[in-house]
Length: 357
Ligand SMILES: Nc1ncnc2c1ncn2[C@@H]1O[C@H](COP(=O)(O)OP(=O)(O)OP(=O)(O)O)[C@@H](O)[C@H]1O
Image (cartoon, rainbow, N blue to C red; front, side, top):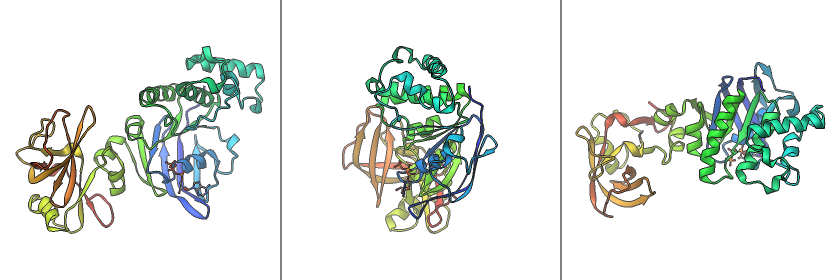
């Protein structure tokens, strides 16, 4: 139904209320790619989508989709579909009328509009609901209608702004798959905004992390997770995020990552990034201590039991760290355990610049 199209942003700059909200954004997405944009609240994710759609003015840079420059085109001329978190449906209109909404403005007759709406409803499993008012739909059904609208928009590029955030967890997991299948079937280039870690890591072909209006890193999710280029990405991505331990400061910290880590780079002002699943602890089956570990005694501060996993919070010198252990592991509060770390698991950062070494 829709032609595939890539997206290219070059030096994109947006100011709102006299303040820069997006700064010098460069991003190239291939046609058919599923791009996810993640980042803390207020980092500019929605603004970036709105700028691509032509809903906020840009103060510099260029936006190209499918080889066509979009700057200067009105939103209606951009062939871009937007799917919002609240679905933007008209509650009193039927599913059919919601789907067909906007087709009339594009010169499509009422009869053709209804026929196209019925076809799309069939593909989304909504055919039995065509006459039902949108207000009487479940969250998942509403989400499907919003996706159906994007399909009817005949869009080259589809922008989704936290489309699943109002759904409960099991439905969200199912809709993730539905959205990915639809994206592939339709040949869309999709830019998907979320602050959900699981969505960002599992859905993206490539993932961009925005912090404070700047695109920090744009790469495959696995690369971002295991090799963050910046402290800002390390500190955002993953649940829990990468733990950043200062390597040079108080005596205790030096003990953790100086004396105990003989091959640590001899440089001041470093941060050692480690993930909870890369730390080892005596008494755990999932995270057993290994022979070549650097080791340090640590005290059990707290255990967080989440059903399928436990997070063990430890105090090691002045540092608190979290280790992932099996749900049945038993640790006594206040007990001393041995915390271990394989030197090769560490990702080193320059504390001043935030850059990975
Ligand atoms: N119309 C506006 N006028 C002035 N500032 C705005 C306007 N809209 C957004 N902002 C500011 O721009 C920044 C980015 O907002 P944006 O909604 O793009 O962030 P976000 O990353 O999508 O956040 P969230 O995850 O909370 O939705 C925020 O500081 C916000 O306050």
